[in-house]
Image (cartoon, rainbow, N blue to C red; front, top):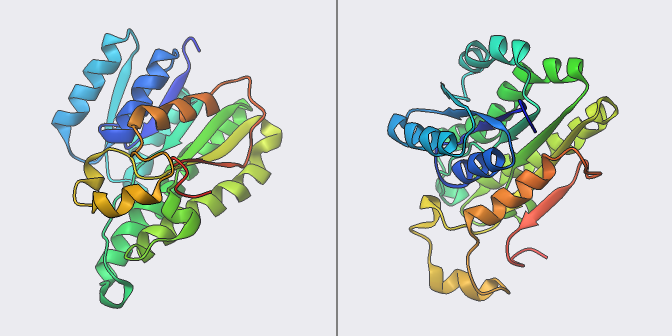
Length: 240
């Protein structure tokens, strides 16, 4: 993977950081985007560089189309990423009957519209190069739905549909597009979950680790694969 670039969107913490480190270990230089946590981004950058790979930071809000374009367009045109991992996502959980318009909009704008903003900015250079890998991080909630997460489930299901359609468009250009759908993974996002109620639903009897998600993403970014337009669950059997 010498001199190949992986753009990891939302790569400063949790699953995104684990993905960035795993791709760096496999030989990618990393472009890491984040919204505003400079301390976490600098720490992730240092860990990537400790692996002997370059890491460039991009700070912007992916929900802002013009801001995303300004941050990435020129760089992506001159140094085309080989792999793009769309990991950014937020949760604003609430029962739908009580869900505010703002809670709906925030999640859709970041989790789904952000995918359009990023990919619309970088897809043409990738098509020009006739090579690449795109991996969108969805969720088990996007596959089966989850009470209290109508906004989150809608956005994550939308990612799956977007990837399936995009895969039909770009496959002939040697750009493979897939989805990884994590279940309950040990990150900051699950700190308030009722563990005693969730664990019995998981056949493996434990939550997943960020490294287990990262390994699947790294595999889907390799050159020697024949996987395209697929959704791979990393959920310990939560959704079968």
